[in-house]
Amino acid sequence: QVQVEQSGAEVKKPGASVKVSCEASGYTFSTYDIYWVRQAPGQGLEWVGCMNPRSGASVYAQNFLGRVTMTRNTSISTAYMELRSLTSEDTAVYYCVIQMPPDFWGQGTLVTVSS
Amino acid sequence: DIVMTQSPDSLAVSLGERATISCKSSQSLLYSSNKYFLTWYQQRPGQPPKPLIYWASTRESGVPDRFSGSGSGTDFTLTISSLQPEDVAVYYCQQFSRTFGQGTRVEVK
Image (cartoon, rainbow over all chains, first blue to last red; front, top):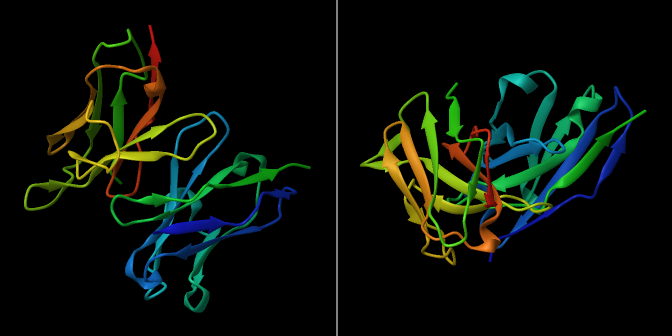
């Protein structure tokens, strides 16, 4: 069955970068797009962007243009999301989602930005 | 960009009663052949969102049949026919596996 393993919680200082990984298993990695969603504490769901694992092509939400990069390593079935120039507003749980449908969600990675 | 708007923002319903949540999109969510790319999620505290309904009306495996989705074009509805205690959660709609509505909190009256 499909499984998604996200990397562990991160604590970063303002201005730093964070790279979250998402290892997928139970299906052919290149078959389905992967997208990222974040959820700030007590807030709703915000779509960050998506990537085609076969081509590596990505589309990012307007709010994150210039600050986010999504990549993958197909040999280990792992996708990555890097977010740069972090501020306290980036404190959130970041979810990796396999677009199937129905979409399959990872458990999330808490990123805390604090000085 | 497609904007998703849910109503109401919160809803209090007695156990056993019906709960209805509306989701409107700024553009049609028609994908192909009468398939609409609209997904409903349930999120309980501390957990990732769980898909309930996809293609606007297809119930995910294991989801109780008291949950149903309907609608077309730009107007969609999630109905819980008989509210149970475990249904207390926040519900979100999502278009084309992209943007979400703002969420509707369902509580027991």
